[in-house]
Length: 82
Image 1 (cartoon, one colour):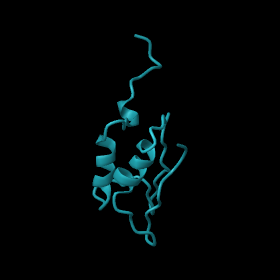
Image 2 (cartoon, helix red, strand yellow; image 1 turned 90 degrees about the vertical axis):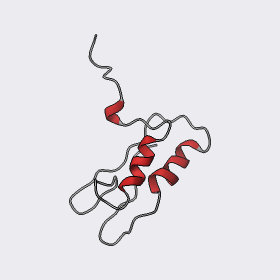
Image 3 (cartoon, rainbow, N blue to C red; image 1 turned 90 degrees about the horizontal axis):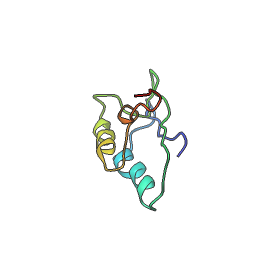
């Protein structure tokens, strides 16, 4: 799934359970095999992945903790030889 997300800014309000519901369902509903999902980048006046302390931060945390979700920092280093 290439770049995706929903922009939250001063004129767009959040979508309840966007990550833990909509995105996770899109990833798992039809038994798809996804190589990666990449969210658009945050900036000073908008975000796609909620920073700590936002109303929807917990939705992303719930998504990240679901079975099958692996974040970049959880992937083993495959470029360093043992």
